[in-house]
Length: 244
Length: 244
Image (cartoon, rainbow over all chains, first blue to last red):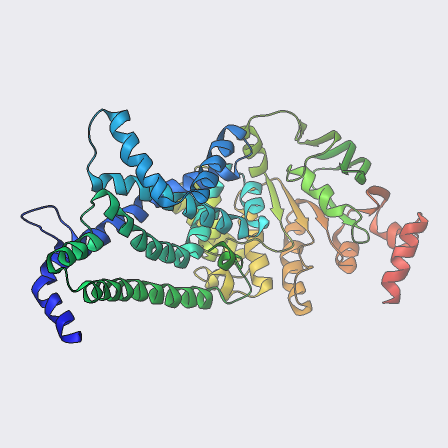
């Protein structure tokens, strides 16, 4: 079985790596990574905006942000994929390719979850930080920008890496709308071979595991490093673990 | 310079400040003392509106701090009131120098070079010229508080407020902070200072306000207050201090 799995990898490594590119769309691991990186990178500013809205005292800001977060938290991602998949063409009057559809979904979905991490990171800072900034005459947005967010986001780095791992796993759902990512490539191979599903999906599992484990490990290392740097009389954001 | 007129503040049914009428004149050093929970810190925090009040007026330089005003007006007002916190509240992601530079640069509109020059001068003044590039976590409590004082002075405020500046310090570090404060007194700075350091109060204060249960029960010169306190509560407070 191992021999046949190795054989499958040898015959299909390019498809697993980049899909049918350059004869077709970019796929495979490359597409999975690009999709997840773009997803998390775009979700990040979105999540900061949502978190700040959630912390706002003005209901016009916090109400929609809170509804968004609660809806996303209470609905499976697959539902959101379908919504975006069927709604966007209706709204835009043009068809939207699977990759972009999946990217929008990821930004919305991961952004909503990430916003809770950002919010927890901000709330975990001692209230004295905001007091000190305001007492010096900084406006609320400036205090956020110069004092609160740099600390909160730095503390959140490990949580964000974890979220990235989650995003990589979530990209597999792109399969249902024919996004040519890694799972899609594996399924193509399986459809061609027909008799070796166990080997094909074992290979798929190993690839995901290696990628995700490396990132999880990096998050742990980063967390330790941040904890070490923080060691001293000033202690920040102890509640981040709870936020994850 | 600072005037309290019929100031009242309630937390629910609990009265924190009751009928406060008092004033700090230009160049005067007022020490506010009294048992824990007597409202001293709350009182000093109403001066730059870190605490709101229920009724009355707090005038700073003739301007009612708690009047309706725009955010920009309040920020400008706050930038002219130096405030030093019990827990220092230095920004841990910035070096000592940058802690001081941030506000003159971003709030007062000084160039970065000017702000740095001013910050270095102030660090020298508080005896920390050689620690400019240290981060707060690398400084002792006393050093952090001295940086915090320099940070407040960088805005060149006409008045400095101290909210128990030495209460979070180890005993051997209290002296270095008080020395810096003594220097300010000698320079003629108007100061309002909540502290438990009675020997410091006796030495530098022009007047002492004794508070309990949200009221100023006695205002007197240090000689009168420590020599012959009038209010029975003040007599008991001083007796307890001496018996320790």
